[in-house]
Image (tube, rainbow, N blue to C red; front, side):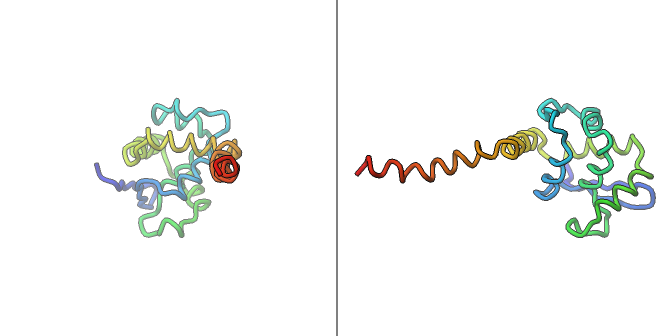
Length: 142
């Protein structure tokens, strides 16, 4: 499968490539707290849980053909997509997103990241616990 997809939306050609860390972080911020992302089965689920944030999600994963990912203006792209993106194309972009990215692996990773964001003590606690563990066990071992 190709790792790059092209769409003409309005008068602009957009590119979708596999997500990078910056995009993943932006996408995580769009996910409502009460959504269980492991239950996402396809485009309809994505459209349903993103709701009004759909255009912003599209603006995150799509990049105008002549722009660099780091230089793109997400707010401007979102505004443009609100006026030009039709539902069949949105569904195609979402389907291609699932094709461009290993979604099952991505969902697991996003779920883990969200857990760490919601419970920072549990993730960092285990790391700091192991870091402080040798100090605590050293006197007993000596």
